[in-house]
Image (cartoon, rainbow, N blue to C red; front, top):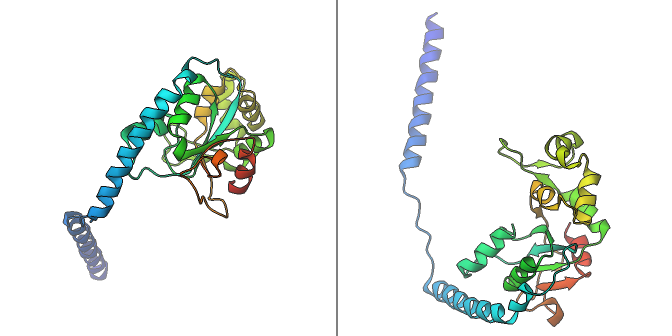
Length: 235
């Protein structure tokens, strides 16, 4: 009995010490992150340059909001640059497109507004028209979902879960999701939101010229059907 009490007392003392250490760690101030004056100036200049670029782009591509869009055209957009030194407007547009992190990819239905927004954030993304094979590969190899009440996202590999959440839309399996996305069907928006943005990798050669568009020999902007060559390397 005495031995048992002694062990209990020792365990309590150890627990008190652990709790005390945790409390002390919480009280310690976090180290200040030092940012050099050069970085601050560089970021400020980048924001200024982006603001000027955005104003020019808004004027140049304002007609896109009035031009008839190919409503049933599907595109895939991939984020290739970070937020450093960028304007609030750029950040908001990328969040609206669900391209919140570098190396994320999303399906988009090419509406007038989407065409316009992609032009505004063109230095940060590359996009184009996917093939059915690439759409299927993205969904079957990289698709994750974030269900209500779950802290972690889950891979899309359970038809029962799909039927439970999308059955009312006549979407009951992975192949139904592929068809709805590929055809930009009536339930496209709901099905697309059911999918988390895809996480892709860097291409083996990296992105060497993010500043220029693909048409100019760079990495950003519209690639048309050539986006499939990139996607096959980053899946």
